[in-house]
View 1 (cartoon, rainbow, N blue to C red):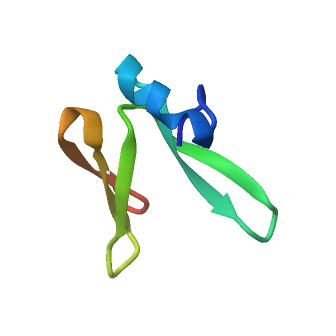
View 2: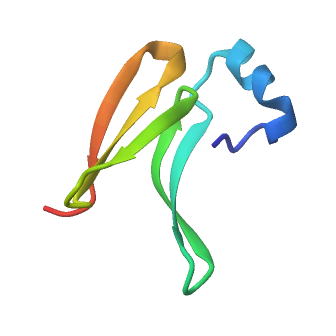
View 3: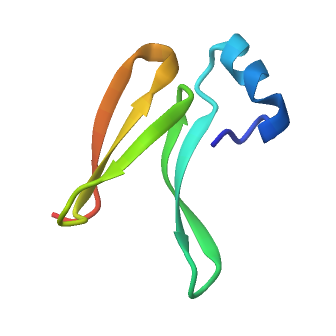
Length: 72
C-alpha cells in the first residue's frame, strides 16, 4: 500500500523508486487501521506465521524480505 499513489497510479510509484509503501493492520471491530511499517519499496507478498506471532513481507523493488514480530 502506498501513501502517495492511488491503486490506478501504482506504476508511478514503481518508476519513482522511492519508499512510499506501508503495511497496515485493520481491526474490523473498530473499523480502524494502524500503520505497522513505513518507508517500504513496493511491499507485497505478506505471509502470516502459523502461530500468528509474526509475518513476513517482501519489498519487490529492492528484492528484500523481512520479518515483523506481532508478539514477543
